[in-house]
Image (cartoon, rainbow, N blue to C red):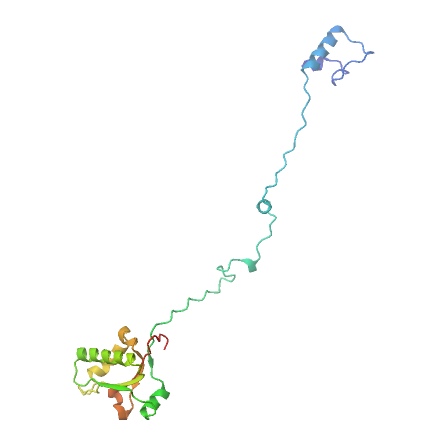
Length: 209
């Protein structure tokens, strides 16, 4: 039992005795002792969450921010998984090589479009023909010529085409000649037929033709 429990009921609430109350001497001494040792109770504080300075951060923490609608989803994430992204476009091939168009072929064959230069590769080895033809086309381009005639010969080896007839179109497809040649086609009969080629010389600085 504590000293406080020993007090009369009128003194247990902490109030001093009134003049009309009759106390024994020992009760008065006990009450004064309790009164000196008593300490007032401090009011309890309730912990309240502090709102951070960044309201958006606080809003995200409590889950108040609405979900992002599908229209605002990142562009690199397709909304429909069945939709496949388009493959990147192929880079344009420099110095493309084309067949000579029919209109130009017909004009050259009928003499309405001049053959500005010609070269005959008959009787040459592949090495000789390659070097001579390259020099010829390089000169034609530097002079600004547009249409020339290359005579390869048909050949008559076991009924097959001649070596140069097969080699020249292959040379035209290589990077060194594609800079000089934009198109070619078999010549008309009066200009050598399958043993000759109409060649369109590429203009200087022309990449897309």
